Length: 114
Image 1 (cartoon, rainbow, N blue to C red):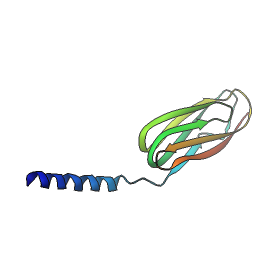
Image 2 (cartoon, one colour):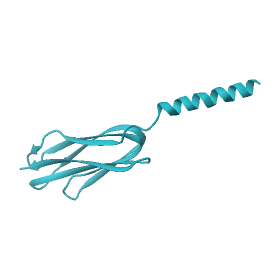
Image 3 (cartoon, rainbow, N blue to C red):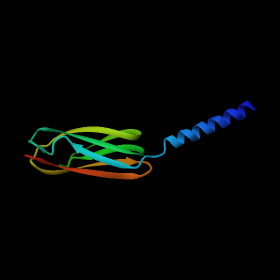
Image 4 (tube, one colour):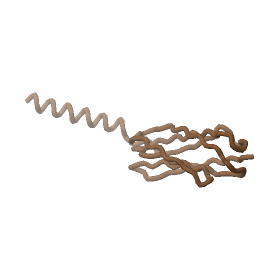
């Protein structure tokens, strides 16, 4: 009898916990500390994402260079990146979150390098 009660309690607790961990609405955002920067100045980016099970955040700096950060199955994440541009111009930065439940979602931000 005690084993059955314990089993029912564990199943009930696990069911309650699962409800608390339902996937969040899937979203990704990328921000930059300055939209206009000088050549060879470091630029800081922040990528935030929420979802079900986020595995990876990738960023493409728009100059054929990119980085990945493994999030270890997070539901929410904030990842900071820093990059220095070697050429002047306008660049579109694309951040992409990969989620087990939702797939991929991207966000972009533009900067100008003088």
